[in-house]
Image 1 (cartoon, rainbow, N blue to C red):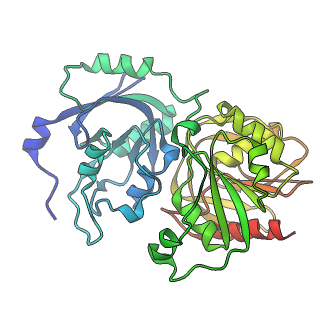
Image 2: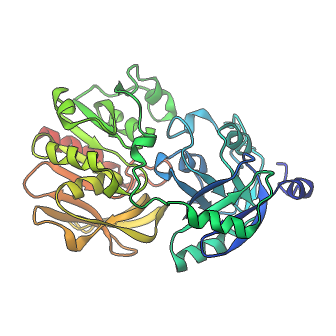
Image 3: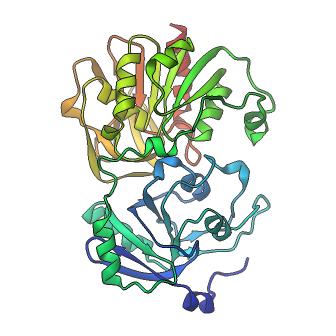
Length: 384
């Protein structure tokens, strides 16, 4: 493998990350030669960087990888989790050239093709400790040739609107209704199945930033999936006569996605519903709960979650900066799952209607496969 210590390149491509608290971290550009603003978060995953950066839930954010060596496996079309990168920028310690038989393009080239800035040479673990102490911070990444001082970068970070009260789901959602993988090629040939199970249920999935492996898992569980844009009214979904409705993951502030909350209100009691991540928050809001911003969010592949129904524990993949406020839960919702790291609400179910939701990602990609049984739970809900 070609080592990344190209001192000439580092001298020729100086870059810096400026944070709203006044911190300026020098590094060098390893992505597109553009500047950008974003919310700085950290992800503790040891692998799966391609699946992380192609997750639409990271729209508006600068993703910091705590693992120091990034780029080794390159990028390939099969491991994408959406049609493109939606995140605002990448922060890493060291960029390596790809050395993997599945690699089709280097990470650097892929970032350049999609006009995403990235900075290397950062002490990412020190940055992570700062974010844990101070909370999520707004940032400005300077990777262009334009002359900008660190002080000017800090001012740009502070001036950015941030993600609170911002609807990003409509920005990352699909443009039109479509059937996921109608010929089975995207699911059966992905390396997880030689053939697909027969279709048992027809469901509608709201695309608030849905990951492709969620769709794969739904199809592998015997569900035919029609994907609809984020702003699709509940009446249009009900006209499709689905056996169930799925509320997907997605980015930014759930309270700002008012149209989806309204759709949830109209659908609850009319059709079985499963939600994950942003979908969990939207369905909780639809029932009358509130959400709030976590200090630094949950971003990683190793979060322990207890199922309160049977006291079992799943190791889960998570990516969210907001959570459901337990004190605000209405009497119609029961807590089913709890995060063992910080005791936050990780799952709810409706006491009277066929509705349940979890805060984490049962589809992995990347991450453990412990919670995949939830797709079977959704099927059982529709059977009943």
